[in-house]
Length: 451
Ligand SMILES: *Cc1c(COP(=O)(O)O)cnc(C)c1O
Image 1 (cartoon, rainbow, N blue to C red):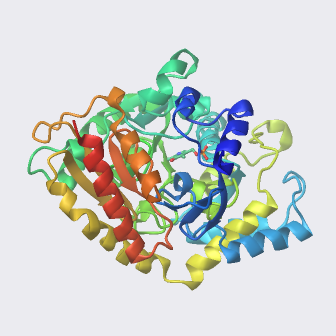
Image 2 (image 1 turned 30 degrees about the vertical axis):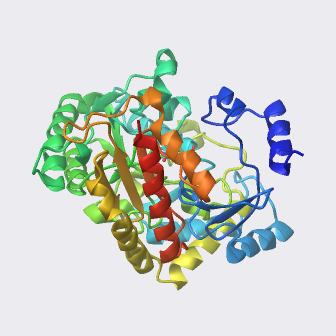
C-alpha cells in the first residue's frame, strides 16, 4: 500500500515545477510532503519528523508554527488583509518602518517595501542608479560586486551575483557587472589570519573602485557571509575599508543582509560588526520570522531627497509590487521584532553558537574535511577529496546529496550546498538538538566521502 507521502508526491509531480530543482531527480529522490511544523521540527504525512537545520532556506527564526507570530497574523487577517500602499497606508507598515529605522545602523531613515529578497535587491540597484541620474551623474550606470556573491534570481540581482551555477545560462540577458575577488577566508594563505586575508583581498576591490568610480553607481556585497556561495566567510575589516573607499570615490554601498540580517551572524545586523552604515540595507527572509514574503530596503535621507521634488520634475521612484508592504506580512514582522525586543535572543544565540562549534569541532580533523568555519548561527563544514591540497570532490559526484539523504533517514533536514554541509537553524533549537544534528552530519559526511 502506498503511503500518504507517496500519493502526495505523485500528485505533486503531475503538476508542480519546483524551485532550484532538476525535476528528473524526483524520479528517484522522494519529495517530502510536510503536513505540520512545530519549533525546529517538520512532520511529514507519514508521521516522520525532520529537524529543520537550515531554517527552511534561511527564513525561519523562532520556529515553525510559532504561536505568537501566528496569532499576530490571524489577528491582522481579521482586520485587514491587504490594501495598496500608494495613496493609502496602514498602521502595520508605518510601525514596522519606524522600528526598522530605529534598529538599523545609523543614518538609514527611510524604508521602502518589496516582497522578496530579489526584489529588494532590484529596488536598491534601481534606486542607486536613479539617485545618480537625478543628481546629474547619468554616466554612473555600472555596479561592482563580488565573486561568489549571491543576490537573488531576477535578472538584475543575477547580474550582480557571482555564482556561475545560477548565472551562466542567462549570460546574454544580463548587464555586465564589475567583479572583484571574494574576501573569502577559505582561500587565505597558510598561517594568515582572517583579518589579514580580508584586508589583502580588499586591494583588488580598492583598485576597481578607484578605476571605475566615474561609471559606478554602487558596490553590492553580502556582509560577512556569502551564504549561497557555500557559506564562505570574511572579516569585518573588509566592510570598514569598503565603506571608506565608497565614500572617498562617491560610490554607494549596498549591504544585502537578506540572509545575514536579524541576528544570524551574532549581531542584529552584520554591518554592526564593522561599525558601518551602508547607503542601502536590503532585508528579507527572516524579516517576517519566516512567515510571509516581505522585504525592505532602508536608505538615507540623502538618497530620499534626490527623488523628492515637484511631480513634473519626473524624479520620483516609480517602482511598485502589488503586495508591497502587505499588512499580514508586516504583522508577522512586528511580532518577530517583539520577540527580539522582549527576549535575550542575541545572547542566547551566542550560547547556541558556541554549542554548535563544540559539537562539530572534532570534524576539523577528519581526513575529508578541509575546514569547519563559523560566524554566529551559521556553521559550515567543507568536504574535500584531498585535505592537504584542498582538492574538492568533483561536483558531478554530488557528495552533498548523500548527506542530505542520510539526514532524511535520520530525521534531519540538512541541505548541503555542493560539498559544504552547514547548520543555519532556527534560534529556538535546543542544545541537545544541536548535538543530534552534529552526529547526523558526522555520519552523513562519513557516508558521503566513502569510496
Ligand atoms: C536568498 C537571498 C536573496 C534572494 O531572496 P529571495 O527572497 O529568494 O528572492 C538575496 N540576497 C541574499 C543574500 C540571499 O541569501
